[in-house]
Image (cartoon, rainbow, N blue to C red; front, side):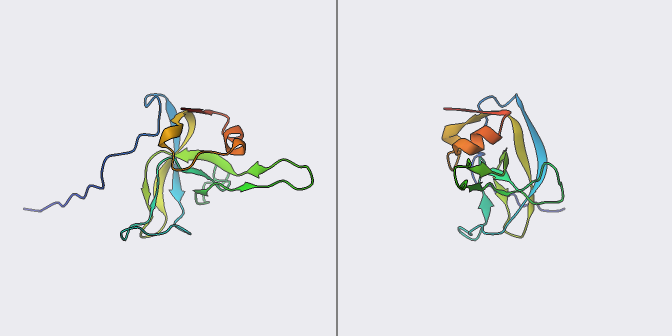
Length: 128
């Protein structure tokens, strides 16, 4: 008889305003620059990610970066989606899901999106 051990890290954080209406893609989430808390490196649900992953599926999803424009040029961002669930990257890059279309609760995000990120995520609507 085998014995299974199940570890629970708490309730799932729901970032979707309407959980039955969204589109998500599978992505590999990068572990670079993630600080361990209680021995775990977790990229939280609601993190806005990018890194040209929509055009190159071999790239790792990383926290989106907004770059200030120079000499009157507008700021730019590499935002492409929002992580649907917490992703544990303690032991290296890990599989996750990135929402590219849907309705996201602003109050559930770890960090509010910038105006540039909102503009880049054309098929995502952020709702209070």
